[in-house]
Image (cartoon, rainbow, N blue to C red):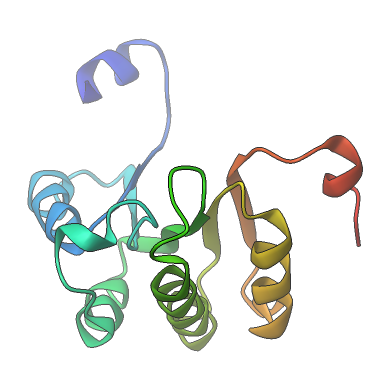
Length: 144
């Protein structure tokens, strides 16, 4: 994949993590590439794959190759059963992003109001970021 990107004149790649174990595997494969940066985080649909470990995320995210915290957020599309746990993990990851001054990469699906509320509550404007997955309306996107 990397060779194909280079052949098409791609100058820089960002590999995004969805679990910490997968991030660690990607890191080992990609650490030698100067023009591949990494994002480290726990995706809202993947946190049940392994126990969430905030200290581990903080340690991994301090690496200079990690330029963002993500993909993180809320996803209520399939179920609301783990809503509270998703919110706690999301809040913690925003706080880590602020602590490290690294932008967030947000995934939000069927959870727009809660996502915006939590971003405001945890002052995500300090670290900045991008909404990568967004399923709301244009009017919603224009909200301040």
